Structures are given as C-alpha cells and as structure tokens.
Length: 191
Image 1: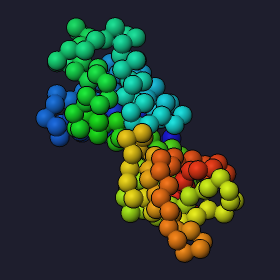
Image 2: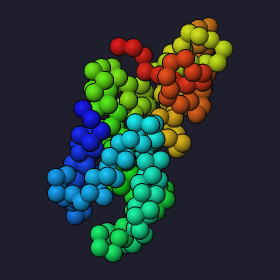
Image 3: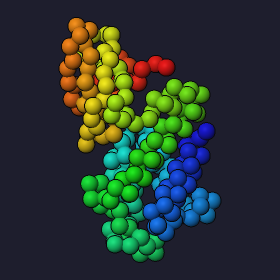
C-alpha cells in the first residue's frame, strides 16, 4: 500500500469524524481539491517520519499558512480561513481526535504494508495498564513494565511502573517508545 492510498484512507476517516461531529464534511477523496489531497499525503509522510499527533497538527498549520490560510471562526475555502489554525492546546477534543486517528491509521497501515501484523500492532498507541518492555541504560535485558499514565509530551511518551529483577518496583517517568537497542525507552513485547 503506497502513501497516497494511506492518505486516502485517512482522508475518508476524517470525513467520517466530521460527519459524526456534525461538521460540514470534506468532499470524498476523488472529488477533493488537489491542495487537500496534497495535505493528506504530506501528513502521511510526516507521520511515517515519527511526528506525534501534536506535531502533525503543527505541520498541518504550517502547510495551510504557507498556502495563504489564516485563522477564521468558519472554514471557508475561498477566503482561506479555518477555525483549527490555532495552537494544539486550543483545539477542541473532537479536533484533537482527528490527529490521533490519522497517526494511528498511518501506523497500522504502514505495518500492514510491511507484511507484519506485529509491526502494525507495534504502532498502536499505549493505554494505561498495557504491559511493555523497558530498556534501561544499565542493562541489555528489558525489564517488564506497566503503563501507569500517559503524558502531555506525546501519545507515545508514558510513565511506567517497572518490575525489577530483585522483586521491587520503580517508577520511570517520561519514557518514549523507540526501537529496541536504545536506552530509557519502551517497546512492545514480541507476540
């Protein structure tokens, strides 16, 4: 599956969220203006490069502003105004959800494209209570951990309760998802 196909799936999911939120939906992919399709493809490329939903929103804002769009209380293609051209923290939750859904779709479809269900699952966002591997700086062996809270940093940055080999527990704060081999990071256990 190529990036354009992934962008199309993301675009259609966004349309579904717009309809669910009682917003005026974007046109279907085949009827969408070129700038809108280009924006979705760029979003896929940035998500594949590791941008978080917050960073994806910032990139989307930069893309829109570079094309002459400005903040406006109503989305208007002709006036190039959009109510979401604000810092991420000022977005309503329903709008933030679109960035998380976009990133999740890209991660899952990229994993499927790689022919690996484990890779697809590996790109899912963590939730409280999930068991993960923690990779400390002083050991090559991972340590079992449980996600005990999510952070404001990014959807893949968590606080963990670690279960140390001596039977004690320890809190690890601001731990990021990364590839095995890095330190002070977490990864999904092999399935």
